[in-house]
Length: 280
Image (cartoon, rainbow, N blue to C red; front, side, top):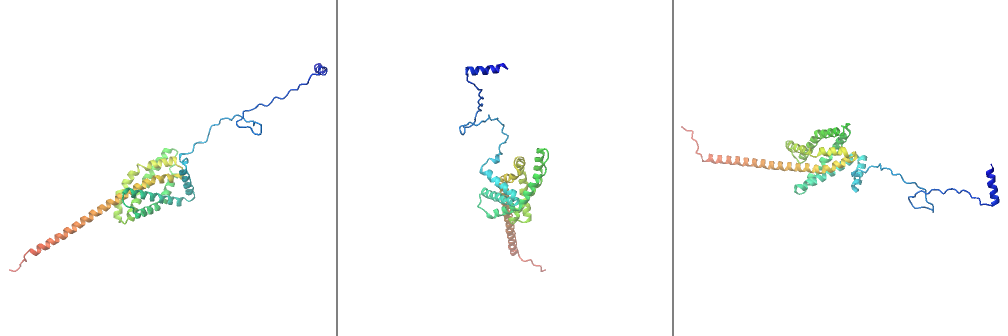
């Protein structure tokens, strides 16, 4: 107790200045930006955080093509049937133009109209089929699901569609039922064999990587080339049929001419023979 009184007495006697303990200045933190209003904001060092946002898919980084695909997907969600019919008509129109250009002949608008009629009639059944295929055969194993979808599609859809395509082409061209059947027998086996080289891979890629709303666009791009091939194959069958008809017509004309010639020769020989006398 004596120490405080002694310090007070000494200060009064010696008149020493009273010093007070000043508060410590605040610690300045590092600032990541310029100061505002003459005062530096108190900021802490940023903590690095791993980026958890994955990169966009490839088809969403194509600029105008991506925007066109998104517009198509929105239209298909709103009006799926109308969008499917319109896109199918565009595909068949482009395919027919490509096939006619490859043939080297002059443009035939009747062929284009036949292709548009066939494509428009098959658009809704084809769309319904692939939507059904998307909802079914989904197993725990992805490989098993893809294999089942490819097998079902190649076993049922491909033969039926190819028969419809070539048969309708023949009927709309004016062929009879027997000629239509000959066209189908001539083209369908070849088209099915060649489809095994393309569509299983397209189907597997589509059901694995392409979202549902973009599958029609992806399949449509591939279908332009495929329909070009089908139109080209149908044209080759038409040319073979025309050649066979010309050969048959020439053979029939030759037989007719030979029959007339033979009859004429027989008549001439009869005129030269003397009359047979039955008198005794």
